[in-house]
Image (cartoon, rainbow, N blue to C red; front, side, top):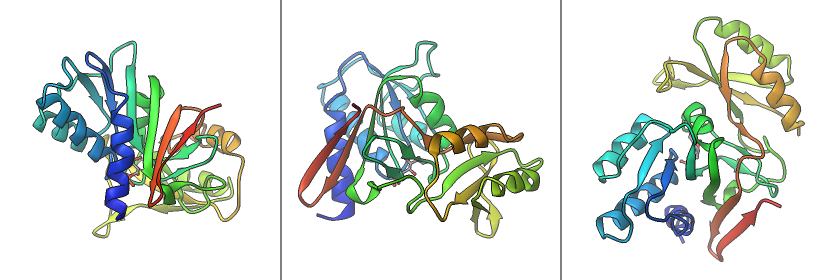
Length: 227
Ligand SMILES: O=C[C@H](O)[C@H](O)[C@H](O)COP(=O)(O)O
């Protein structure tokens, strides 16, 4: 099975949890896209009705609208179910997200989900966070160098994310520093320390937020469930 087919398989497993009248949180990225497409398909087929969705990026919003999924602001009470991809996930469902640049809105929506399902291909499963992916940190452009120095002091190598030679600007108008760790770290400790740096708006450590993960491989779809 190709990597794309695996992403689609994982997405289909998550979308099986969607019910009519739900308020959804729609994620961002190449895997989450399959979930949004499938929700749109089931809505058009009349298998689902009265859905509303809070979206985690401009791109996901545009896709959802094109599929006839009503897009709303994040309600006060959060969402019933959020579905999103990840860059890394551990056996205890801690994750790194944000290589697609949507971490800030993702965290805002997914931290307020009654149920949050991660989806991906099995290559995203790691023994510890930071094993392969950097931790993305969204930073205000003002004071970027100082924030970068503070991140370095936490033991990582922050790299400004570029596209076409220019700093990437998120949907929120900020820049991204991808923090590479060369050794395992304490995620709780690092998450707290990063969030205390002035100028940091958010980070891609999603700890204790997900309830379920579907990881697809050639052998089928594995389920990880929060204890
Ligand atoms: O900012 C982007 C998100 O956190 C994505 O969900 C994550 O980067 C995984 O993306 P993909 O499904 O494209 O691998």
